Length: 108
Image 1 (cartoon, rainbow, N blue to C red):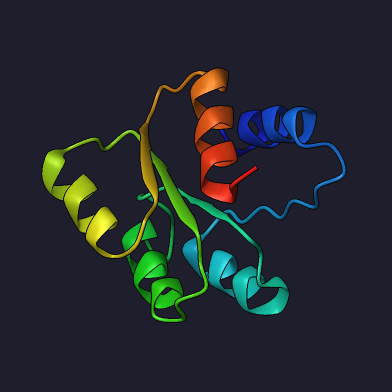
Image 2 (cartoon, rainbow, N blue to C red):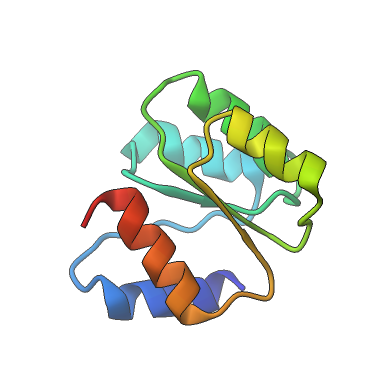
C-alpha cells in the first residue's frame, strides 16, 4: 500500500521529497529527523499504531496528519480527528480522493 501511495503522490507532486516507514517507531524516527510537512498514517502499524504516532506528533503542534486506514469505524475516526488529524481516508481509496485530500491539507 505504501508503494501505491508513494507512486501516486510522486506523480501528482513532482520534486517533493518523500519518506516511508514500515513501523510506527520508524515513522517517529523519520518525523524527528526530517520534520516533514505532512504525515500519512495507517492506524495499524507494527510496534506503534497510528493513533500513538498521532498523539506524539500532535503534541508537537507542527504535524499535519492524514489517516489512511481500513478501520473506518466512527469512534476511531472521531478519536483521530480530536487528536489533530486533518482527514481520514478509508481503504480502499482512489487516487483522486488521496490527491484532493493531500492538496487541501497542504493548501496548494
